[in-house]
Length: 306
Image 1 (cartoon, helix red, strand yellow):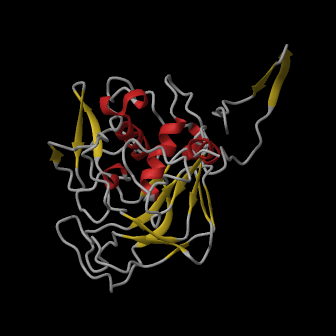
Image 2 (cartoon, one colour; image 1 turned 30 degrees about the vertical axis):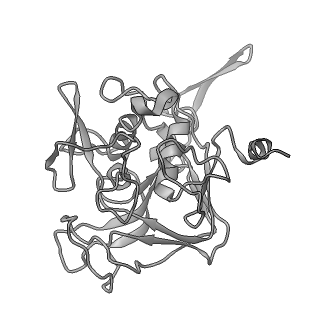
């Protein structure tokens, strides 16, 4: 069978399975890689998560796909640059970015191009900039992370908050959203020099307590940040909108703030949906063709996918 025909069996065209294998010689985080082929996996989890979010995007408001993508992790050591990412806000019709110190960033370089730095060993890599502003890699829209071997699929951080500095807040490896799923991988302490404060020019041997670093916390899609007037989850998707520029051809997404239709799905910031002391009372139940309508005695605030 010709190699091109064989590759057809190894490519997932729907983007609902993405592959990450840091040990594969052909693995790359290049902007033109979709990560949906066994013959060309991603090198990092963070690059795969960006692509999982992109596969979920659909033009138009409140219609992005949810609970769609599984990321398959091959055995090996998966590094996570979990430093706090950039803030973003609408400044008179133009995007304005701020770093962890809330200082304005003149050249954020978030657009993915041939010149983008994806190497996690480089402090200027683009991947950490998409993180939560509180630190941690956001797992978007019900994405699953599934390893192939619990003991041999290892995840290690590159940012460990300084336990002796009270001005450095707690952080996390992953900021999860509702509907996420995790299986068959293990998280370990850092085993190489790490970032530990808000000065990203400094690194330290991680031979200190990791007690200010948790494995999982929720991405905040409810509380607005004073600096931007946006939630952490809002900012994540708005940053992603500006990642896919002209160099990505048919994968271009219109930039924020020109449009804002890449937004959180309601279930992303709920644990299991709305909870209350009493069930919703149904006052009317009708049907017309294939559409059923339910009227409740109080406002239910439920949405599609709840």
